[in-house]
Image 1 (cartoon, helix red, strand yellow):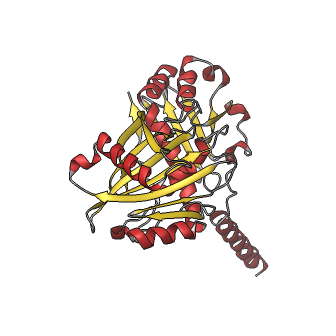
Image 2: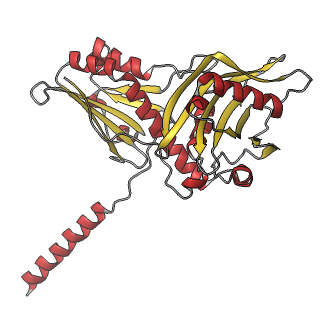
Image 3: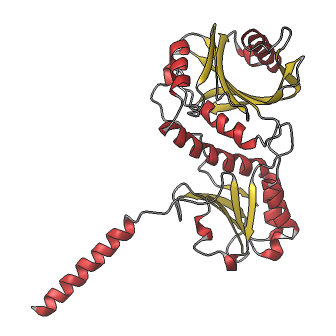
Amino acid sequence: MKKYKFYLLMILACCTLASCTKNMVLPVASGRPYEVLVVLEDEIWEAPAGRALFDILDTDVPCLPQSERSFHISHTDPKHYDQLMQLFRNIILVNIDKTQYSQTRMRFARDKYATEQIVLTINTPSQESLKEFCQQHRQEVVDFLTRTEMNRLIKRLEKKFSKATDDLAWLIFSCHIYAPDELKSYKKGEHFFWTSNNTPSGLENICIYSYEYEGPETFNKEYMMHKRDSIMEKNLPGEKEGMYMQTDTLCTLVKPIVVHNAFAMEARGLWFMKNDCMGGPFVSHSRVDTETNRVIVAEAFVYAPEKKKRDLVRRLEASLYTLQLPQEQNSPIEIGIEEEEKSTK
């Protein structure tokens, strides 16, 4: 009987331990936004293959008034990669072994050691193959890590956002948008509104405006920027007559993207106040409201002289992805991340 009780207690203990392990609460990932830890041997990190990976992460953010790198880069040799370092929010693990891998492949895992974490693993047979992979997929790696950080911001915005901005979006456009909570100052116009944090240390702004959809040519760069300039001139004049916002068209990039599984056009570049000395970066999403046959443009722009602007712009850019058109109410909000492996022979 005693022996039976002993075995019963052992079974219960094992079951309890398994249950605790399965339901164990992971710690929250550490590190600053856009910080990436690369785990790679020191000598390879300094070799051409490692420099190729470094160059990906050292890429400048496009369309900012000054040079700012896309990521904060940290590095450690695998022999120093301990449990504390496993808590980094973004980790790139590189395994080089020709006996195990015939080609270079990259895959990712969410929440492997901590919550809100992404671990990218690159398995490759050689340093030359790693270098080739980095050269072929540099933009995809940058986009992947950027989208990961954007999704983290979106989750925070869903929990705490500017009610004033969301109310204006609903009142004027029957839309919802989650902008940072401090954007409370606002101005309304015809098919237009603008909200701002209105602080002397730097202005963070979001505006939404609309105009008639006239077919595919509506998303021509010149057409879009002409509409932007005319609407901003009308709704956001400067302090004195003859001052108004305009686009620096030479520094504007336009490309198609996907938002809520639908077509959108992204524009990013620099704005300036004509006949004044103000200016800064902007990014916008132009999308079609199929219920009204109008283009809805959500735009974020920053005025922050003498300050870094990367994090300010990206924080506001995350808000643009939360815009829900009338036909998209209550749809989940997340920037898509490809599940397929990237590889090169």
